[in-house]
Length: 493
Ligand code: NAI
Ligand code: MG
Image (cartoon, rainbow, N blue to C red; front, side):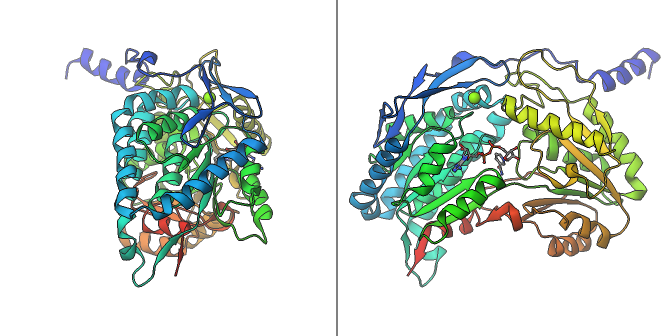
């Protein structure tokens, strides 16, 4: 190899974060209305509350749209619409007919995939590559998957009859707005329930786009109602006497409030709450692959992932090597404009969430851990955070115990299997974990002892509609996805 080429190759390795020309997705391929009303009984209706709030693009702080704030009377109206649709149409409809509607929604999401991806990225700040390649196709796949179950419930529950519960109140967060709507709505409809869904206040737009599709798909009015608002709207849904089931994904704090609110009622609930997943690297793991898994585990979607691999445990003999590889890889991450197809790490979802993350970064430093951040420059406008890792972390440090929900990784080393199992299990959460090793026996040993709902082996953040997802301990209860995801929406007789 000539000297010139050699030099070039080395330069490429270290400059690779900068060698791509920008490839900006076009905003004009998506239609965002200046004002959105509430989707109740098949129509967009002005809120009785007469109130609206703005949703912004967290990458630019520009206002995207003004969205209705549902008050108590609006929640009542939506629940009534859902009840009437349940009693008069949906529960009586042959299951195969219900399935057709759900398939139709799946196909229409696919047809409008590009528009959904653009809106998701503008409203929430996640990289367009993720919205395009993960969120939107996975959302469509959930509708396809559950459409398939609608007329096969007798096989899902052999020798039992699966009856719907009635009206489901569904409250979702801002990290995977369309995908969480799909996780909630698809199994509810497949099992014959009707729905009142509330998206998060910072990311309402793809759910409202979904409402347009549901209208176009000609679903019987009231089967799906989508109402926007903040925590009060959510609380009004939870406390409504005519709701039969609550499905919530969000913070553990709100999950506890919901649990208290429904205690002593007949409401069924699934709660999918926070996490503090351990990603465990053994010395026999393929290290380059493992480093990709670490990067994916914590920097994917800016760490706004309940199952983010936010704790890293590296076996002592490869510790230095893994940390060096990780730092090198962090330097090649492209942080910035989420609409650029090259971007790896986009915008933090809100000013409040950025402040929370920055508080934890400060705390990590105060607790005596050693910080390393990517050298990248951050955009001047919008909410951004550098990919951040902490070494010299103690198990008792708050950055190792609490959910940060940002691109911040707490790293520790370990020597033996038993030690790492104990450390991994030593948090209040138990949603997910990752194991990297060449040995199948080690994988089986660890998965059987880890108290985590999902354990990935030699991969991370893999999702499929057919596999169940959910937590242990303060990560919540109930399962979504797969055959298991049908169960919370039925009573078996
Ligand atoms: P949050 O739990 O307040 O919000 C989630 C959803 O619940 C939103 O739709 C919100 O409007 C609604 N909500 C808020 N208060 C409610 C109440 N009293 N009754 C019913 N619904 C209510 O989460 P937030 O404040 O946006 O984020 C705070 C922290 O929560 C994050 O830093 C992160 O640690 C965690 N979080 C975890 C998520 C997960 O996927 N497990 C998702 C979002 C946040
Ligand atoms: Mg927004």
